[in-house]
Length: 547
Ligand code: PEP
Ligand code: MG
Image (cartoon, rainbow, N blue to C red; front, side, top):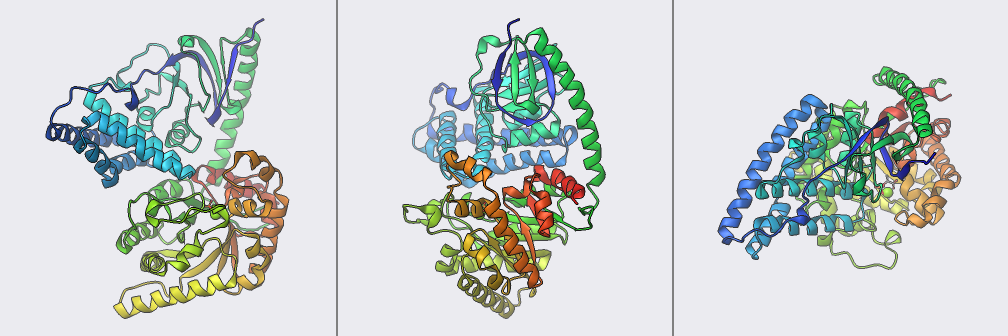
């Protein structure tokens, strides 16, 4: 019997479904035909009207998302509404219109250059945000061109939806009773669409590459857990699929019940070791989601995102409000703000950093901050001021020597003195920690631990520097993944050192979410594991199973 045609992608939410395929028909921003050009003033007016309408519609989407999928996912539409107000984005469009483009074309051009700029930064989080910018741009273009949105498409039979890429708003507008699952040619597991799909419980597969359009209407099996889509399956494939579906439904139900039952209990191993389960976030907007997934604190606030999204240095006030917001929302739970870590893969044009042969081994993170003292002080003052509103801690990235800590401490003391003189409140006992991201810091951990309250291991960089594997280079990813032992030994060395001196240690790199390592971390008496939001429950459950 002929087998079906098989496609592979990345499953972003588990589940097995079967049904007919339907291709989503939408016009993307890059397919717009230039409409008849009117005067610049008229085009500016069209843009402003479209923007106002888009904001209204997004607020509606947010309300709908609140009812259908919950508060944390509705946050995405808050982000979209904010992006529509973002000056960098709107100024880019206005600039294009003033330069002679029609409103729709101006949106397309601005969207392309903005997303290209973010993608060039090579940061996974920012690349994922590009989907949001494309989404709002397409939304604006749809309004301007009167295009039919996915909302209006009606089907009588449930189907597996296939799209080149599915935007968050399209995902929310999907009539869940009609959609069995979705498959996209592009997309990444960390995109907002992926987060939404998980939350909506829709089995989904991204990054399948090309799927031929003539397969529209054909019967298919989607197994998101196995990353596959089989189109026109054989009878044997169908019966195997059915068996798997029954088994998987049973396991999923039991697992979900178990995870929910442990969510509000502290993560304690069977041997009685308590591990704090913290979240890694890039902005205060993620806090609601972190809390509803049981985060006991923020183990890593990657503060550089506030700088990356701007076209000039953020002011102390801007930084302060963002940090204060995070501190308040966390209601007394610890918020560890990592000071600016730019350079290497995170380049910011207005920093005007010199081009380097080996940027990962070059001018980045604390090295830049200690050189650009006024800029560093602005951030430190903002963190200190926010510490009056919650339990905030400071964490220094990429430390290799005692000197960097003593220098930073001197600057922190200077900021504290200034704030006291000005009568501005701050937590005088604010905790200070460093990231263990270099072999040097692990080897010197005995000395370094005397100077700080805590360590947090950044395994992404620690692996890169220990194994001489560029974290941006997919050709050496395997080497990194297969050789965790040298990194684990450095972590153990650091854990012993900080515990000896009465401090505590967390792990906040990707290895913290690797459940095959959890027992090892427990054996080293790691005090905290900080992971991205989707991994919070799983890590918590795993800690409870540890010896
Ligand atoms: C790390 O290096 O593991 C880390 C958490 O920091 P980042 O990924 O932001 O470099
Ligand atoms: Mg790092």
